Length: 243
Length: 303
Image (cartoon, rainbow over all chains, first blue to last red; front, side, top):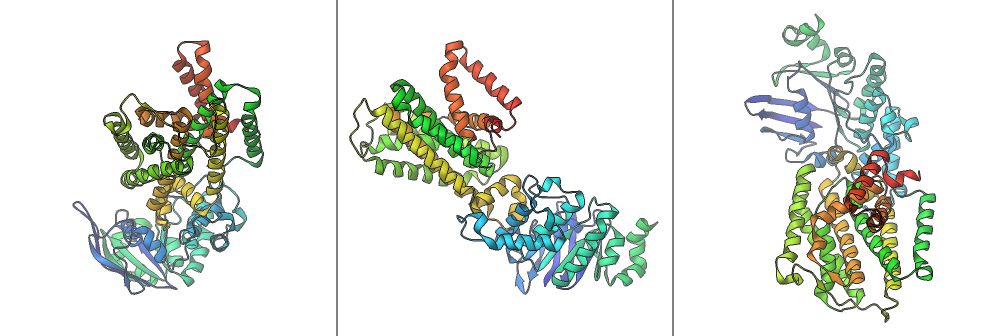
């Protein structure tokens, strides 16, 4: 379980995230939506440790991890994907995921081909996202949709309990969306998932809980049906998109 | 960065055998030339661990080479079994200090920081009496394990240098196949992602920097042993730049690239004066042509 309490982040005069609290539970997909500039990506970066909060604390399974670096959080069980594909494009698909799994390995002078644990973890992660047949291909030869799946496989390879998915469908067409939606449903059974996504059809199809952010603040929080019915949310956000 | 293929390693081994047989069919002059090329290859190969391995372009590297060479001078005539490890260790300690500080920066700033530290080492020997002055000094060679007559020297040093280069190449070839080597390549490909996934990027880079420095120290030691002469010039930043050129010429993506580049550049320096007085121009044009025409350097031709 991951928890943010009173999280704020200021960039100069701009309060990108303001006194925000939320809880991510295993078995629950928590979607964060909001107009551009609402602070969603800042929130992901705060939770992942890429940015330090100006105020507030972050907790993972009862431990305060506010001061953890991004690498320490990854090792503690926080996996994330990136909005812009952020891979080792000239390496094979398997090697990308294997490197993700290798982060927790000691004995750095062992032959990589003989150290089974990260290879097994990588194959398992590729299987879960449905990329196992492409393992030996260079990452740069994958389609856009497959690259998005690879992003998720790399996050999974670190055996995280919490998954932060930062616009996993960014740049995807409708044909890419379907397998990713099915995948997210599966993932939310075993992980605590935070999803930042612009595609409202996807969000309402997969989310168990939705938080609506506007100007760095929580505008509304509730079940998808409640959010859909909320007049305030419609006015502030959904109305503009749907209309 | 990948090591040569099985066939490539076989070709390298054959070339090594050809060099090893030089005492049978050639004279002292060409054996000394070969030794020069082998030492340049060691130095460029040690830098390749940083450039091709971790994506770190350092201009401090000649400083570690020079430290290794000056260690031989400062130790005086001791056994080579002592001078070699001490040279490697001295260079490694310097690399640890310089690396710990300069690896806080990246990209252009890393380049400039290593330039500054490298030049500090240069001036340490250039402007203080520590290293025997700015003109350099002749040194007493460390004792080899057996007595070598003056006539035997070129052949013995040639074989020694060849053995050290071969060991260095084999060691790095194996190292790049370990978890450590794979992690370095990951850092070279995408440092940010590696850090985000939980790799201790800073420590991995420092380990590579120290090891590369130690190997440069070994190369410098072999240079001092071979030439019986050291000068502050060995530590100058242009030596680092020259090694970078060798890597570029030989192939940045191949572990054996710098060996090919070092041999090619040494031969070019030797034979271009036969064609023209403007040898730097010839070298420049050859490197330019190689970079423009051979995207993978000399190592790419054989693939």
